[in-house]
Image (cartoon, rainbow, N blue to C red; front, side, top):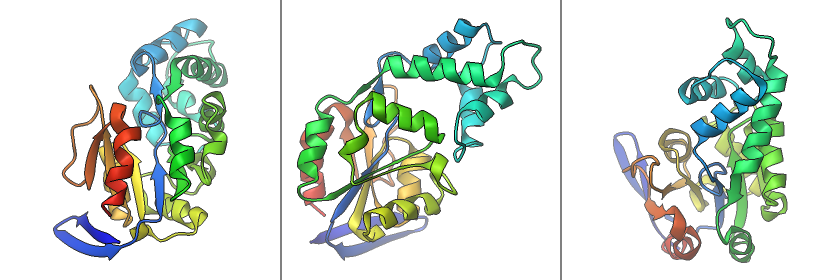
Length: 235
């Protein structure tokens, strides 16, 4: 049992809690691209002869479809207004193949999650269409690594909506104040977890978001497996 520094806009609250669960983000936290995502997108676009799409435009469309079953609505938005023979489903399939080819699991993460599960309930909450994110988990062979693995494409809301985090703690049968959440994105992961009452722990890496003051701790991604247990034991 330990004191947790909970940061909520305009307030800092100290809570005496016992940490019993930890949740994880997937993309850029446990699933690491071997080449940058703008390149992956450009390669998918080029492979089917679609009009050029920027990474920024993709992310905006992705945020509008966090609860979709597939990426097809994302690419339908992006192709709207373009004169092209490429359909959204074809482009979505091409991007899925490129992503699957480019992603690798964080080094050592599978045995680490097995060890972590001896002491904590371990969950996953990832933003994105159902089929796309489930395909990533199968490709990375991480499907069986969690007590509960939630994809927002199967939920009513995506991160940072508190409802997404509530779905995670409900699935793990724990409470928010006894749950840590590990991710990299400041808005979706850190602020989302904090506002939902979880303990936010930020993964940091070269080219990633800056360390957020709202995070209870910051851990270099390359040191996540070695340092996270110590961080968790302090709460």
